[in-house]
Image (cartoon, rainbow, N blue to C red):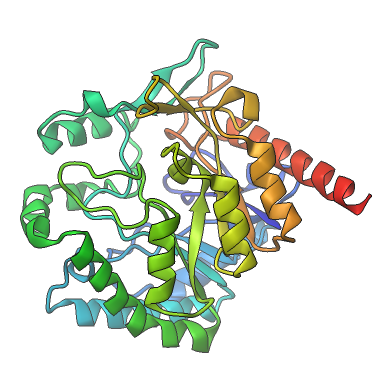
Length: 359
C-alpha cells in the first residue's frame, strides 16, 4: 500500500510538507487546488506549481482529494453538461501531471456534518463529534456553529461563498430524492468514464458522512448495497470507491472489513481512509472521533488492516480525522500529531500482519 497524508496547501494549513515528509512510511501528499471555484477547469499552470511544491519536499503527487462536483450536476440542471465538460478537462489536465486517483463525493449541500468540532475527551484532548439529537431544525444554525468552530480555517465542503447560497441550494434539491440523485450520478459517470479510461485516472467516490439522511437530503453511498448499485452504474475499474472506515463504520450495521475484502478483491477500491470512531450512546447513533488504536474506538482496526493485507492491497491509504493533542491548535480533524501517530500504528499493523501471513 502507498501511505499518504492530507495537506490543505501552504496558504491554509499549519502543517508543513517538511513535517509530513518526516513521518516514517508516508510517501504521498494527498492534496488539491483550493483556490479554484467548484465547476471550473483546473489550470495546468496551478497543477504544475502544486506538483513542484509536493515533489520538492520528497513526497509523491498521485492522489487528489477532492475535485468537487458542481451542484448543478447533482441536481440535474441543464447547465450540468458544461460543468461535466470542465470536469473531463480537469481529469485530462491532472493526468498529465501524474495523478492516478481522484477522490470525490456526491453528497447534496453538505460534504460532511458534525455537531461539535471540539468535543472534549476524558484524556484532555478534543475531537469532532456528531450527536444527531443535537442538530437544530434550521440548517443555518448548524452552519453558523461549524463556522464558529473552524478556528478561521476554510473547511472543505463549507466554503463561505457556497454557504451564502444555502437556502437556494435547499430549494434546488427539493425535488431530488435518492433515486434521482443516483440517476444524476449515472449521467455524470457515463460522461466522464471514457476520459478516465483514456487517461488512466481512477475515480474514488467517498461515502456519505454520516451515512444517514439529514435535513431531508438524500444519501446514496451508505453501505454495501449502495456500493453495488453504484458500481453497476458503469462497469469499469475506473468507477471505484474511497472506502472510509469511519464514515461506513458510523453505521454499526456495516461490516467494514467485509466491505473492504469484497471491493478490494474486485479492484474497485483505489483509496482508503483509515480512522476510528467511538459510539457515545447505547443505540449507536452518536459518535465522536478517536485515536486510531482499536481499543480507543468502536472499530477493529486490526481486522480492517488485515482485510487489506490478506487481499494484497497495493492502492493508496491515508490516516483520517484525528484528535487535537499535545496542545496543538490545528485544523479540526487534521492536526499533525495524532494523524502521525495513526500512520505509525497503521504501518505497524500492516508490517505485523504481512510478516505473520508469510509464516
